[in-house]
Image 1 (tube, helix red, strand yellow):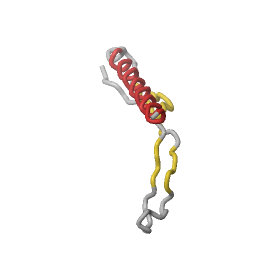
Image 2 (cartoon, helix red, strand yellow):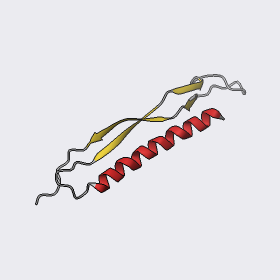
Image 3 (cartoon, one colour):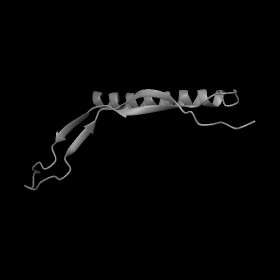
Image 4 (cartoon, helix red, strand yellow):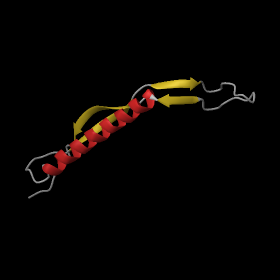
Length: 87
């Protein structure tokens, strides 16, 4: 259960970062020369519970295996250098 709470926490932290960046973009929408930002997210490590091709309980092979994700993190906040409106 602690693992599932940790995964939920990392997802909530990522969503909070997304909201903060979006709020900053909206607050500066009319600032001259402002370039909007975008957060970049990355998966944390995966835990492999069953390898692809492992035997199942019915003596058949599992083609895809089973992996369990451990969350997400914010890697960077990148600035988008697209051209704004000409005035």
